[in-house]
Image (tube, rainbow, N blue to C red; front, side, top):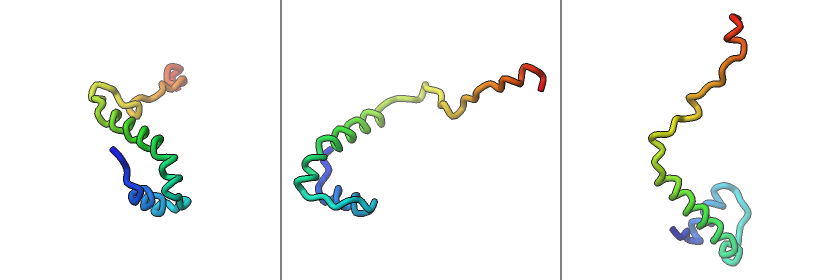
Length: 67
């Protein structure tokens, strides 16, 4: 999904980044588009069968010692 120069400039401005020329935007565009493609791949992944790591807890090493 191509990102328009105006959109990139608005994002940079909103996050108080450095102002970039159209030539500079053209240099970073391939990397940004690669990130966007990877993000779309992640969104399409079915993770319904994967247990969340936030639900896992390390076993307390003192729990087996009775205190």
